[in-house]
Length: 228
Ligand code: DX5
Ligand code: ZN
Image 1 (spheres, rainbow, N blue to C red):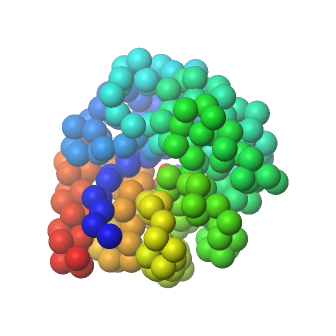
Image 2: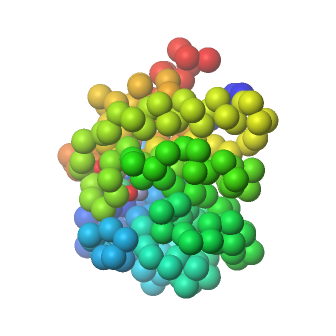
Image 3: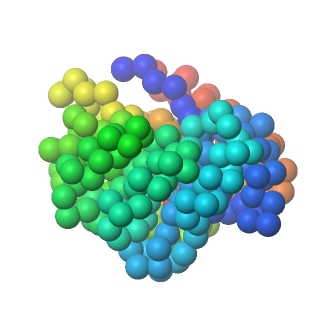
């Protein structure tokens, strides 16, 4: 199945004192989706942003897809607020959802595309019963909570497995990857089937945000051309 590559800059590594400007620079460099990491200090050992920050970003960036990655306990309680704030895609962790099917339908009910995330220690087969109702599957290639961690290579075999299952079952979900995506890993990630590439420190961590986004996206798209 032909697919496009999307670069989803993760604002976690942006300068939060100038969030709008940093996000716009990443989009100017070719970012096609803005990845918003929401952490509650319980599901993961860190705290980030809530619906008011998303709503402010939405005012300054009206047209880009907001990809909201919820790393929180009890996501059902906050899904309506994140949808109202302007998110387009909302992903929840398999590990955080007692009633995953219900939660994914709740996201859809609030007008967003539902997606599911798995941590490095969670096997792909735990998603068998929801693959037909998700817009994408997000494979974590680090343990969630922080930017700038080292890529965990088992994510590659999980992405390949997902691509194979999608073919066999003739499904349509996309494959997203998050954590340690950078110039030294992006070729392997794309060859393994990654289509929506989340990148935080590789885009925001070294100055010239637009330039780093552009080079990463170019590397990803050329890797895609050589593997199709
Ligand atoms: C980590 C977050 C990621 C993070 C990735 O829990 O989900 O989106 O920003 O950061 P990098 O790209 O620096 O690994
Ligand atoms: Zn994320």
